[in-house]
Image (cartoon, rainbow, N blue to C red; front, side, top):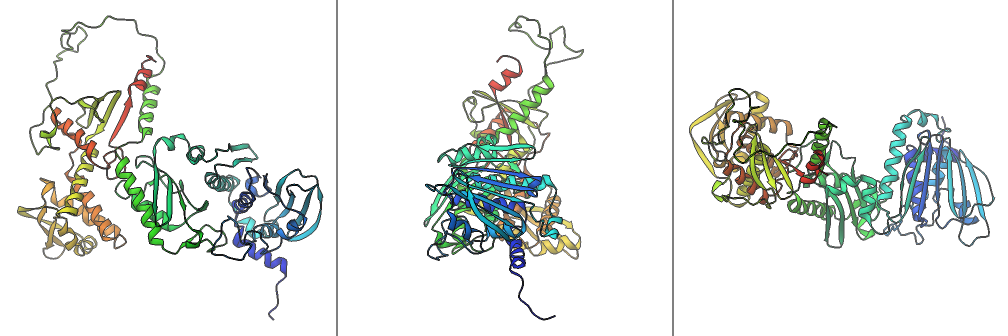
Length: 595
C-alpha cells in the first residue's frame, strides 16, 4: 500500500489518545484550564462515569470570539506568550486539551470575557466544527463534553465500570482542589453531589482536612524545609496512621499534582524504619521552586516531571521527613484509642442503671467479700527474677509521677500489656513491641558510633541451610560481621556462628540466622547496603525483645516507660504497629455515663 497523508480528523483522534486516556483525563485538563483562567469557583458534573457527560463551569476570565475560535485548534494556547518552555507558570501549556477532547466527543463551549457585551458559543462534534454563534452566557466558561469516545469505540470498550471511572474523576478533582485552597470546588454525579469544598483562602491545612479528613489532620505533623531555593511544606502522617497502598500520597510541584517515582521512593525511604514494607504513610507535600529547574514537558498528561538536580529534591524530602519523624514519632495515632473506645462502647451498650451502693470500707478486700469465689485468695505481688532485665531499672525512680508523658505503671495484664496511669487518662503498652523498638534504636546507635559490640560464644552454633538461603547468606558475611554477628562456612549447606552482638544476650542463634537468611534471600540485591543492615538489625531486635508472657516487676515496667519517652520512634515498633494506646479520662467517663 502506498504511503499517504492521514486525514486531519483521524490525526487528531490518534493524538487524543495520549491526552485523553479516560474521562478523568478530560476532567483534569478542563479543570486545569479553569484554574489557569483565574477561577474562584469550579463546578464539575459527570454522568455514567463521564461517558455520557462531563461538564465544567468556572467563573474565570472567559474568552472572546477570536480566542474561542482558536481554542479548539491544535497547539493553540495563550499560556506561553514568549515561547519559552523553560519558564512555565501555568498548569496547561501544550494547547492540546480542547482539540483532543473535541476529536473524541461532542464538545460545546459557552464563554464570555469580562466586560464583553455578550458571550459566544461553539460546538465541535467528533472533530468537526459546527460554527460559532453569540450566546447569553453570563460570565466565565461552561464546557460540556458528551458521548466521550463515541467516535473511537475501541477506546470506549476498554473503559472500566461507571463506579471505577467516577472514582478516578473524584481523585483527579481532589488532587487539584488540595493545591488550590482559594478556589471552591464542587463535584456531582448521577447519584447526586459527591463533595463541595468551600474556599479556604491561604489555609492549605484546612483544605487538606477537607480532602483527607479531620482524622488525618489530627494524626499528622507539619513539614517545612528549604534547601538551595527549593521549599517543601505540607503534612505527613504518623507512622501508626498508614494505608495498604500509596494512593493517599499527594505531591505537588509549583501547584501541579504529579505522580513520580522519585517522590514515592523518597517517602518510602524516610519511613523505612517505622513501617512494614506493605504499609504506606499518608502525605500531602508541596514543593515550590524556580520553574527553570524542573521540566514538566515530559509527557502529554503532565503527571511526570524531571529535575535538573533530582538528588537535591530527593534529599530535601527524605531529610525533612526523617527529621520531623524523629521529633514527632513519640506520638501514636489517636485512631487506635478511638477504635478502642468505640469497641468498648459497643459491648457496653445501654443497660439498666445500677442501684447506688455505698463505697466499701477502707479495710475491704476481695478475699473477705461474701461474693468472692470459693478458694479465692489475694494475688501475690508480680515479680520477675530470672533473665536479664529488659530496661535499665536503676534509672527508674521509686515513685513515678503521673504527669510523665507515659505515666506511672500500675499493672500488667496477661503478662503482655502494661497499664500506666497518666494525669488525664491511661496508657496501654505492648511490652514486646515497645522493647523491640528500644533494642533496635540501641543497635543502630552502636553501629553508627562505635560499631556493634561482639560477644564470643562459648560453644559455636552450627546452622544447616538449604541452597537458596545459603547462597544469600554467603554474600553477606562481611556485612553481618560489621553488625557483630560473625558467621563462617561450615561444610556444604551449613554455617557456624562464632560471635553475636553483645546486646542480644541469650537468644536462639539458630533461629536468628535462619530468619536473616530468609530476609536476604527475599530481598536479593535490590536493597542498598545501609537499608539491608537496618533490616538485619530489626530482625536481631525482634529476637532479643521481651516476649509476651514475661512477668515484669513494677520497676521494670516503669524503666521501660521512661526509655520509651526518650527513644526516637518509640510510638511504633519496627513493623509499623503501635507500641501503646492512650485513652483519655473523658472518654472513659463517657463509657460509664459520667459525662
